[in-house]
Length: 362
Image 1 (cartoon, one colour):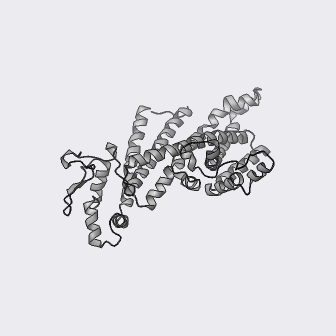
Image 2: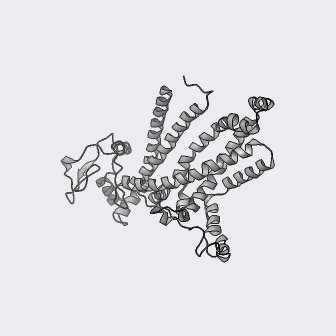
Image 3: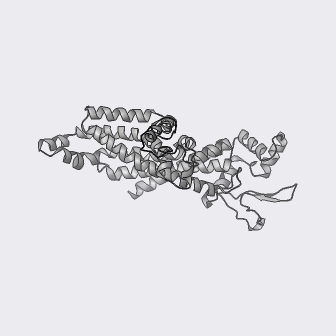
């Protein structure tokens, strides 16, 4: 098992290195760098002035060298501005003497640089946005996973029954409906004071003014409540639970036709004990992998939900970094997304080995 984990970690590190280089290459293409120079300098810069600005700010060196500086395995650039005499450098902090600056400052040293838009440290921006998205992911998972497993198990227990067809139809419909559609529908039905359920509940005296839920999650960034956080959580949960439920249903239906289940039935074991004691554990092996794959989707796939409900989390930050050509922030968002994907894959592989006793690691 230890060798298996070390091998997977090695493959994960190599994959992360390749993916981060691809992202670094794409974000440092010449049009992006030219746009950055004109945004930070002068929109009417000539080509020579653009090249000069890029060179003064550390973007003019070879791509591989700058990638090494960003990783922290190559000494950071340091040079004196020929016009102002001011020292500039990747590792040079504000009001710091050049001789006091560290030689290496990159990803491996925990230094993600500064945002070119807000001039704030990228680590501060990423940390706060990840915390907001983490709260959203936690509650979405708390609703999505138990509901999906329950729907899938109930549908798979009696394959072909009316309950199976009804729950399967619901699962397919929830997965086929994009988040921006289900989110708008929920807002109209539950968060509108003009149409939907809220006016009816007010008319019947069941709701004292206002709406059943709040259509914006902006206030949830400061204080999460049932009123302002239910709709974004439901929007994410509805879209994600359909796939998990269908996988669980297929796995449960397959297990229920296995030979040992038939033997248990012939011996007179009750249907409830067959499901709980014999079928359930084996049926949850396949959905476990699917559940783990929801983490990367939730981290980067909540862009639409966060934008729709005005919730400034990690997905919203990723979109803003791309639209504003904020290279350092975009690189940091990309490396976080890559690490989340690879770590969840590792956990999924290890968990699958423990859940499935038929697999042996040699």
